[in-house]
Amino acid sequence: MKRRTIITTSATVGLAFLAGCSSAERTDSPTETATTWADGETTSQTDGDASDGPSVVVEPSTTALEYGADYSVAVTMEAGSEPIETRTEIWWDTEADPGWTSAPGTNAQWSISAGGSETKTFDIVPPSTGDVVFAVTDLDQFMDILDEWELTVEPPLAALDESISFYDGLTVTMGASLEDEIQASTESYGGQEAYDERAIRPGIDDARWLVLTIVVENESGNDDIRVPDHRDIDVLAAGNQLESQDLMFTTEPPLFEFVGDPPDPDREEYWVELQEEPGYYREYGSTSLAPNSFVEGWIPYVVSDSVALEDVAVLLEHGVRARWE
Image (cartoon, rainbow, N blue to C red; front, top):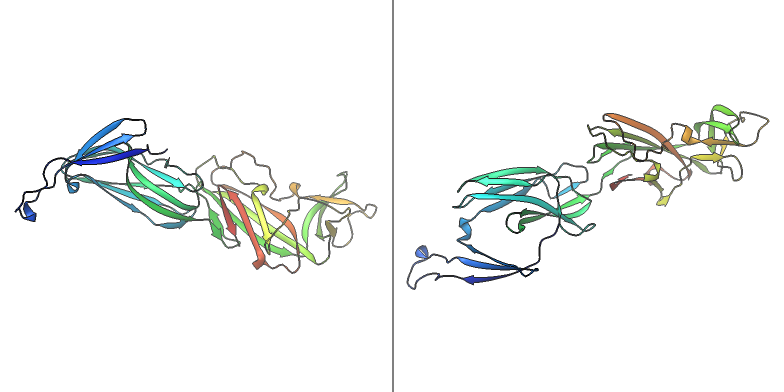
């Protein structure tokens, strides 16, 4: 939604004051404003003393917040000597999506008697991270902008093992640990035989497992929340992006090896398919997570044994990019 392009001119109607009058006796003349729209239409409006007309005061709850935090705006409209009957709406403009867009749930009807005032408070979900410009507009006065203000929205950031909440009601916790070995159910190469859980370690020297644990909760009554899958997650170690291990083979190059004897002395080749484990590989697609429920799982990565947890960062794309480190 965008404002119409306008060209405005003003002309003074009447005499401002008589020579010899004191400032207390001075009466300001009304001003006629002619507005020419881009489509050629011209309208005019005569205003009295500015202090006699309506006034608008906007009080946002904050000027900066982290994505996921509550945000509200209180709009106070005060009538002058004439009553007010009008409609307003709050718009926003972002760098990612330039142009005015109406903020859901902010369309309001005002009916204020002369000399009276009214305050309405609006809860707003910021559309993105970065700098957001807001405006309150008078929809009955050619969409005039009555006031503008800005909000800086920082991307969500948390330490590992802490939670980040999103505006749709999803809460995500990311944890990480470094392990020399992990437990996994194995199969013979080709899947003919399945074996119990065995301890496995990376198939390369001077390496260990980085195990990412994920808990995703729907803490709201919203039953239309898409659960992120493993493709929405990126893990960095010392600035390098890691590749998750979901299907690992003992064939060359071996991605894992057993700790101790293999399950079958007559076989040399095995695989681990972590999608069949409690690993976080479910293909949710458009499947929603039921209200007040959760899913959890884990994803292993192979890292150098020189990597420490302080070197690890986890990124999740869910409307905006969240980060744990």
